[in-house]
Length: 418
Ligand code: EPZ
Image 1 (cartoon, rainbow, N blue to C red):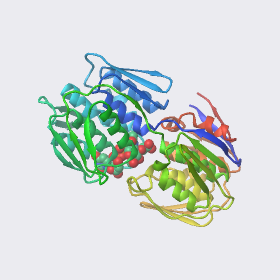
Image 2: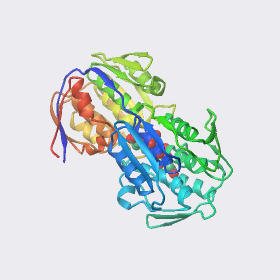
Image 3: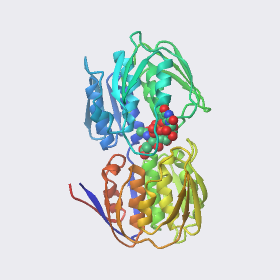
Image 4: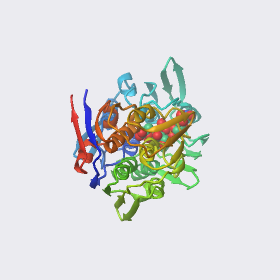
């Protein structure tokens, strides 16, 4: 298995060109299952995206990559069963469900895999699809779904603005009979990107800023050309790499509007930030300040995906920072790893208290999940001495060549092993 060897303590300085957003690419590829031939640009080279391409091909939609573009071509046929190995490889496999029922009138899947962040039920997905006319039988982790008459519009209210459920409903409703009103929808930028893709394919969708989306189903979705938005979490990660090493990092091809809550926290910590069109620049400070209380929340609040990464920054800042994780009930698995580096962090339920400022030292480390892994790598970049980081396949799921970007910024990091 590959791992990173990091010799920390170097100031990171330079430019990172951001790749496209994983969490926008995956639902757009799911939507491509029911759309005409399309060209989707700015798709990152990530293992999760490769899994999505495998699923697409399985469903009868040929998909090939040309540099950062994915070209999808409809073929006749395809299977309405996603094999367990593909379902288990990532969480987003469940976002194919609405598209499959729409395409085949039936679907057979098992429960999705993905990062272990606590309980991750799919009740909101299933109840919405049932309201749209799907019959769904659950049996020991297997789901058998059918809608012989096709899906129809419905008035759906989400009790929580689930990103994945919103995506599933959008895709299913885009080609369903009649109108769907979705209330309490997620408002993450990746949802906006999925809507833009579906509208490019002829979808009739309007979204209010309050999280109500009206989708009038169309009989056929044609193809389109679409460019995926930049990855705001990868962007936030590289800015934090600058902050944690008292460095200076500029992002190219960024969308600053999507990074506002992260930029605000880094500014509060004493970093200088500047936005110039598609460029976002950050300069760190030798004395980062504590952050007070950081609470994760649905967009436009502070993203749960940045929680572990900002926690690494808080660990080197002066004073005490309190994190409250409001989205997932088990998203602190990185904390024991950060402690190995010397971070002083205690946890009670959803609250983590970081007493920053202590010196960090290299240690043998393990990535526990995608963003937790990124946090551990950043903390190791700031720590004096050598760290070996295992389990970097988690990082490959969401960051294109992270080690190459960090090395280009002046970090001493190499990937070894197979
Ligand atoms: C998406 O996951 C992202 N994944 C996650 O990013 C991100 O952390 C999350 O949204 C929140 O922003 C992708 O886009 C591929 P949710 P998703 O449904 O869709 C509960 C990363 O690191 N819930 O919004 O799975 C759920 O348990 C990943 O890139 C239900 O109760 O997130 C959680 O507590 C990790 N029932 C909360 O809602 C449901 O049916 C948010 O989940 C669905 C969700």
